[in-house]
Length: 183
Image 1 (tube, helix red, strand yellow):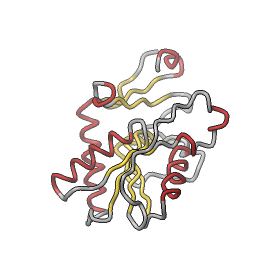
Image 2: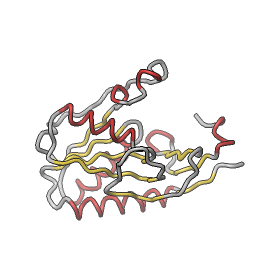
Image 3: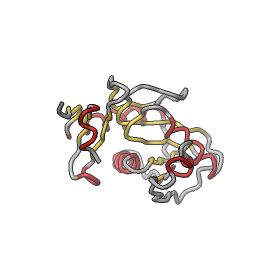
Image 4: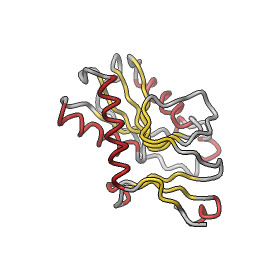
């Protein structure tokens, strides 16, 4: 079976625009807002959203969060996990935090991200924006802002590719038979 392109570059752009508009409606004031992207592609998406806001509403602090050591499978995957480190140079205490991720699947990464944020201090609130929500939750976690929801089989993989990392903007569905070819 072949990979299926779920979103091309234009569709990714439209989804990010939709996310930005929805976030803007909810957070009228950006003064107390901070964006934190979950590595490895949520941080790129967070920077894109922050840049879009800066053009229209003012500068928003943005950071990158490495959730590796907060994962509930860290001990089992210790040798496979590559810790990249977090880069958050603003105080999260009392601030409304928007976590940004590329794909929401089981909810475990988001739970780890919330633990990591709270370890930095108590924010006023935490909201979640994702480019793609593919369902199959294992935890009671839902995104506040979704670029696109897609139905997938549990054994399929949704891969987000972004030009800053991969040279192209697109979202690909990898079927179980194709997964051996993916990185």
